[in-house]
Amino acid sequence: MRNRPLTLLYVAADLIAAALAWTIFFLFRKAYLEPIKFGYKVPVEVDHKYWLGLALIPLFWAGMFLMAGGYSDVYRRFRTKELGQTLLISFIGSIIIFFALLLDDAVAGPSYYYRSFGALFLLNFSLFFLFRFLITSNTVRRVHDGRIGFNTLLIGGNERAIAIYQEIKGLHKSPGNRFVGFVNVNGGDQHLSELGVQRLGRWDELHTLIPKHNVEEAIIAVESSEHAHISRILNELDGTAVRIKIIPDMYDILAGSVKMTSIFGAPLIEVNPQIMPAWQFALKRAMDVGFSILAMVLLSPFLLIIAVAVKLGSPGPVFFRQERIGLGGKPFKIIKFRSMVCDAERNGPQLSSASDPRITGIGRFLRRGRLDELPQFWNVLIGEMSLVGPRPERQHFIDEILKVAPHYRHLHRVRPGITSWGQVKFGYAENVDQMVRRLKYDILYIENMSLAVDLKILAYTVIIMLKGDGK
Image (cartoon, rainbow, N blue to C red):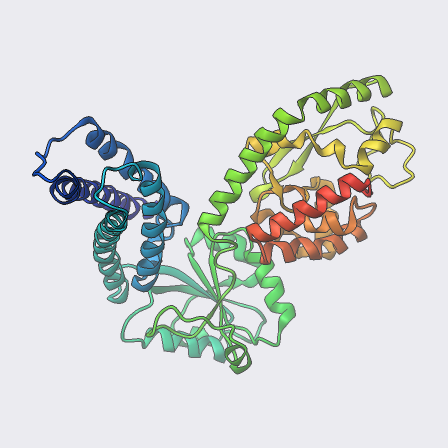
């Protein structure tokens, strides 16, 4: 992976900057703060606290940058983003270190705490930003002069494709696009061939063309009004890890859809480059793990009672395991308390309904309170699921849904969840039509994903469980 050397350079730079900042701050305390407190010159002695800090604090800062996405997409970082991100990380990290390690420092008065924090923050921010600015500036310069490029595919060969191709090729500072060819959307849009751009195939062959030509970016050059074409192309590109951009029209520009990150770049709409900031993803995962451990410990007596009730209620195992499709389209085994009779699907996969005779007596009670889902905290803990996310389905029903709603595959961009927006709105789906109706809310969740939305969905789920309104 070509990102690895540059990523390691950022990590090394942050570790060195953190070590330098901690060393200078240690000398600042010994040479300035402590003499004011004690009234005499304090000898600078390197003690065990300094060495412990030197070993641990750089790792803490590297973790902060990792959580904030400071090591992702390193060839596409830019200096203004570096400034804002480093400023925020330095401020939050300095607050954590100050309250964890420095609040009990011996100082001459309360005002010196502010000086201590100010020195800590300024040292870390200055050194982090200096090193990162130098690395990022060098990378940006190499992109602009063409030494670093991203294999780019044009989707469409019409006049719009020709115009954006000529505009990008004519830019004084290259945005890094290396055109490997184009694919046509209909039989007539092959005008790019006249400029010497290679036609690689049709848009419905994208899944095979992208890995074959190592495509990193795709520019969709069809009319914005052709929503059906754009939707089908986006579905075809989903799951490919390709950065997707669309040529805007004047309405898109006036509506504010075009967000520019480079003064010299071509105006393009980037399609959902990031579902949620990296730090929120890290916090979401931490919340998943912490809440799952807490729930399994606190609810263990209750879970034991349910397990006994399920065992006594009908013959068969306590737990029900079934293959579902999760993040990235990978299968996993979901675990639930069994709420149906054994061999409930001996005639093939089928969905249940409110009056399904296969549901046991205890199972009906569990479903009303969504209590049958509680064992899925284990799936969350081991990383197969999240607390909140689209409900995972079986491959059989996914194939049925894709026939009428190809955009279903967007759901595989995130971990499936114990509860979801669609689950809160509709409960258990009884047929494919209801699954498709629920799909709209799961797509809305992904496009508006945030910790605040997760907390709202969790709150409504708890209300449903307490009221026994699950269906």
